[in-house]
Image (cartoon, rainbow, N blue to C red; front, side, top):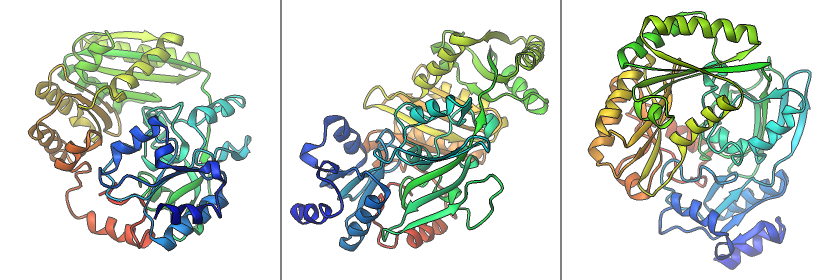
Length: 435
């Protein structure tokens, strides 16, 4: 079968873009092996150099019923369910061009394989940026970030990544290229496929281009870190939500995170203001006044210290150090977030780190233990009891086979399966990675 695949792919791809499994480098192999079942090692890693080649490749795969695992740079390949079948890994890493940048309109259209770090550098020359703060920001590609809905802490001010997408194009199961949305903020033409593809984990098609709305880089920035008793932090959070304060990022932190940041051993709240200096000073003073009444300690950071603080926060939550590490996503009613964080701390003292967004209740967690299924079930139940969810992103395959990573409780599943069938009738894209 391998030679049959190779001969057909050589008609549409250059030789360097067709990498047999035995020639795939070690870093890629490690990432791929974390997400595919032990019995379905792929035949090839393919790296099409343009969208036309990508389209032709998918068309050939479709005709031959070859299963496909789409990805960008592979930084999040191990997220989600274990892939049950794959013949081809198709990476968009060579699709890394800026197609159109309307500087005055604050919009940009890029190919899906461009790295976020490279895109931010390009935008920085025009004093603009894309307000997302995902895992592995220097290496993660735009297509991969959108496919995993990985927004980060700027969600507080700018919403999720789906709120920033104006349009996209993708390669369908039959190799045809489809488009949705447009290039302007007020465009309302067509179905809102942008939201459907956000968080689709490569199961509906391969994202090829994306159009974003952009924002000017704020003039100044400052971060307040607060720590105190859980009850007082909860009151602080509620007061914050009812105020007119406008942070760009706001995260509630478990005690273990606060301790790892060397800021104390109690519950934490980290709030970032980005605006003109006068606004930052005024809002920070308001927060400090409220915190003082609640007996909450505060620390104000700016410049390099502030940047290092946010970077350390991401590393604490997201870095996968060992095979026993589990990372995941949590969603919960915001006014119950502090309670969930404290129960997490009680269940796994010194072995769990988590942060939850102040307004949306969406957060991330990391467990550095070989947890019993009982602990994972308790944490998921605590979230679901408060109209939330708990999703396992990264864990060893044995855990994912015992504990369903997504945990969707019921009535949404039939609709999801219908959508999957409509977009991928032969189940070629990322089989079993999602739901």
